[in-house]
Length: 306
Ligand code: FAD
Image: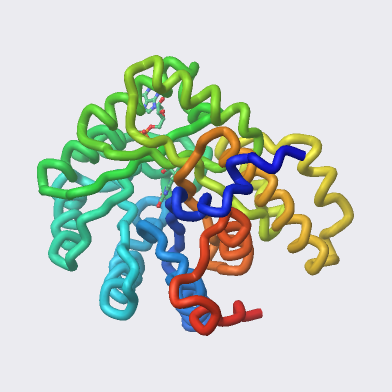
């Protein structure tokens, strides 16, 4: 084994930036879990934490409430996801202003999926922003400081080819996006090839891999099918037979995610975005593996809630 691997360097954690994604909780129990999760992850000093926006803008108030509480009660920097699906330009502009008034200056600008869910046919609102590129332009016009957008290492399911997909990413960046965050993926070669394609098209912003720790393989496989992410056969085999064995499932999930992230570190990746599903355990463990330590050491690192 090569002891000089990048991922084994003692200072590697200092070179890596992480961000965490949450979704707005639907009830009190979910809310309590989210705050335990933010408490657990905060000492890892993420560059930001982002809060998703439900299909068709359905969580607008809950997203705003969650972001507001992050600002009020934590030292974390929030980024608000925002979609333009099913909204007029005026409505989208109003939400942008609402977030800016709350003190939010970071956004993740998305087109969004129709209210019927991922995979349903998308039709732009006749009076709205047609796609994420137009939403980025609106955010920049309103003075948003830091705009991220989505990228798809396996191309977006609606893109007829990679050229169309990369072209849309370029439009988003040309309109002011500072970084792209990828859809989750399990094959690092696909990510690397996508980054190469983007660089060749003159896109130079960071393309941050979105890492999905597999809390529930069945759910991930189902969701992946709908959003065009490929689940390799080897991954399915690793989780085979673990449906009723949550403990082993969690251990395998940690190993799978660590393997993926460490390999990306070896390939020179220094920024990671974790889809936490509002759970701290796997994200925390993987960050630990890549040398990220809780500031203030052990007394801040409370054990994760069951
Ligand atoms: P766009 O960039 O506007 O378009 C996506 C792709 O569709 C493009 O690559 C392009 O090739 C193709 N396309 C678009 N228009 C056309 C056209 N006219 N002709 C041909 N091809 C076209 N969804 C939510 O609802 N809420 C969230 O909070 C949320 N957060 C996300 C965070 C990340 C990091 C990612 C990766 C996705 C997220 N999504 C979220 C999902 C996202 O809304 C969907 O993937 C949606 O289908 C596309 O959004 P976009 O911003 O990528 O769209």
